[in-house]
Image (cartoon, rainbow, N blue to C red; front, side, top):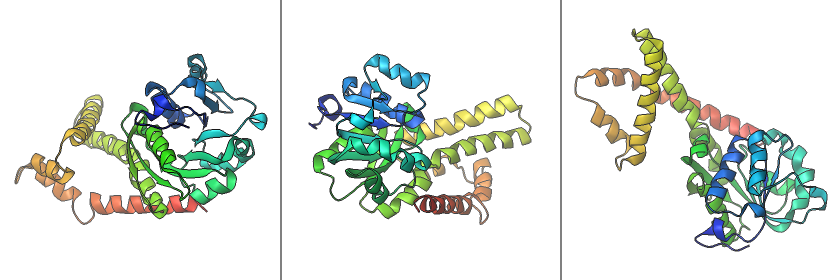
Length: 276
């Protein structure tokens, strides 16, 4: 396996993607757009969609007989966590002692990856904006992952957005709660902002458009700005103005911050439960 600054273009090994749903498909699209040779990619997907089958026309192999397959250089696990152990017997023949195993399954620890598949594992948590190349992924490697394997994993994960690396796997539950589940919180904000607009007298269609564009526009401003979110918030807030009155409610003792803290704590707890 060859890895360089153009890791995807220069990848000379074999890669198997187990699970080609929305996230797995988004990642594969990013890899191919980044120059990964489709002839080096195999998909394992028991129920391939039309979108998955479309990858075959680009040169990707779909659902070979894994019982007689040789060990792959990289195995990316994008299956549902609940089905992972059932899929283990099919995946195990693909994994050699030096195979890099990259998992994006929520709540599945490195120890479980090693137990079921073997290889050298990296646990990663992306989020759904990966579908448009604006995701953020946090990854933690096992101790036996080689530097060039970490570099390859970084290239694969970076194909759909930013990547942050951590050394403490225990942090992954909180990562899942903040960035993995976080897009749902933002979508809920747009949903409830529209509902509040209707309650204030706006037509539903107009309130929906205003809420959607406000949330997405503010997110893009945050993305492009060098200022932190607190400063951007203050820049919108005139003293004794309308925003100040609204923020007094949202930032009160029963407001947004304590509610979101409880929400993230609940998601963190559930992530820990999934790992058991």
